Amino acid sequence: MDHIIYADNAATTPVDARVVEAMTPYFSQCYGNPSSIFYSVGAAAGEALAAARASVAKSLGCEPAEVFFTSCGTEADNWAIKGTAHRLAAKGKKHLITSCIEHHAVLHSMRALEKDGFSVTYLPVDSQGFVRPADVEAAIRPDTALVSIMFANNEIGTVEPVQEIAAVCRRRGVWFHTDAVQAAGALPIHFKDMGFDMLSLSAHKFNGPKGVGALLVRRGVLPDIFMDGGGQERGRRAGTENVAGIVGLAKALELAVASLPQKAEKLAALRDAVQRHVQTMPHVHINGPADPARRLPGLLNVSFEGAESESILLFLDMAGICASSGSACASGSLDPSHVLLSIGLSHAVANCSLRLSFGVQNTPEDAQAICRALTDSVAEVRRRSAIYSE
Ligand SMILES: *Cc1c(COP(=O)(O)O)cnc(C)c1O
Image (cartoon, rainbow, N blue to C red; front, side, top):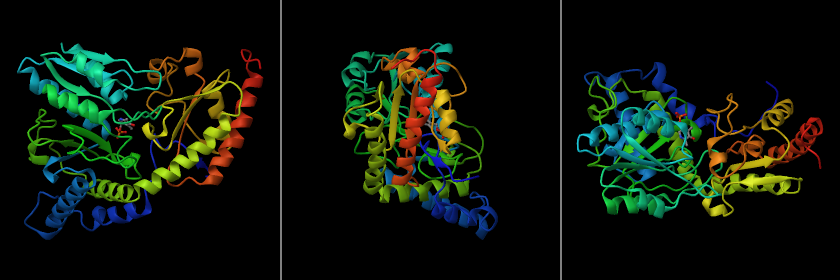
């Protein structure tokens, strides 16, 4: 493949070479089953697992016993939501609260519960994508089991007031889960101090491997067992552990957290360079929060009126640039993004929206090349479009 500029880091990220190096011994050298403690290759794998758990706990401000490894962020979200619903249904609590801009891992888990007789409140957001903590408080009922609000949105970058929402939930005695898949490794997180009950993360969003994630669960909070089988993950999520993947997750998180302020500054500079450029183009608007402090540093979502995103993406691809029309999970469908519709965009404008998400591998030259390609691509698409006129 020729040189490509990868600007879709909210979909996934390349694995850091230091992470690959940390993982490598756990494939064919130290390949033991961590539960096989009576010989050294097994014990060594068990020790690597314990060290990874301790490292994740240190990176995120929780106890090692509060870390449960999963196969991905989607699994962590499913477990937190369905596991809580089924656990608390026995106490007559069959109501859940979420927002209408969550990732499908959360939204579709909620829909599945509705089919099983649970009731769900989907809170609206304002034009910048913010959930209001007062709306959360007003939606809590005596039978509410769980509130699940994402830490940061994967399409428009809104950083939700999750600490305030966690405080409301704690006061009202309702468990609070946050999908922090976009936030982990990108924003400072302290699980205990921020008052969360459960938090989901996924390694491949912070330069770790795909197929491994984690759910942090506060001591005393007990969603139902996710997978029955052996005694792995304290008997709550059975299945032989993905040792190499877990070692990779811990290493990637450690690296991301250690370089967090520099990383955020670098990504924000790339984002701002492209944002300043697109703001000089006609009929453009930026989606997401105006306040940079309440926005993911590396993410830019922009609508180019009269230029359909699918067509822009084809031109960008010809220029070797990878971007997205929204979330990877929703692309391929012709439905406009539920997030963009929720912040008040029309179908027509939502279909003309592009997401650029920067990563540690991107350079200022990449940002310049993206600016040039956007000018050309958008002009070309608009020229061919019957509906656009200057
Ligand atoms: C990517 C993503 C997920 C899903 O994580 P996977 O590990 O890909 O299953 C969930 N929530 C958000 C906000 C995401 O960005």
